Amino acid sequence: MEHSEHIEFSDKKPIKPRTEDEKQQVVNRLKRIEGQVRGIQKMVEDDRYCVDILVQISAIQAAMKKVGHSLMERHMKHCVSHAVHSGNGDDAIEELMKVVQQFSK
Image (cartoon, rainbow, N blue to C red; front, side):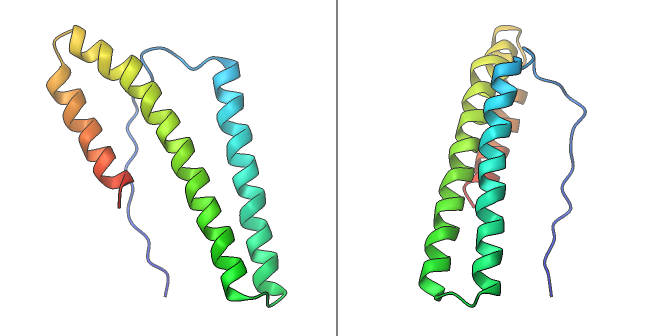
């Protein structure tokens, strides 16, 4: 049985829109990860050794964390910084802390 969580998305936009280059870098990383996931699916279909599959899963997890850290850094430098300077820092920091807690599960 699959477990799925209900995830809510806000309608907020970044304070400073991402440049096309920033978007492309993230998209390229995600496409590489997508390819790695397809590779793992093939490994399972081909009945590959469990440890080899687990090593690939670990690599994907590390790659996803790297993407997440990159996005989190950008959020702190732009959105949270802007909120602090405009007097709304407490809410922005609380929101960020919830994401950090979710991210570190």
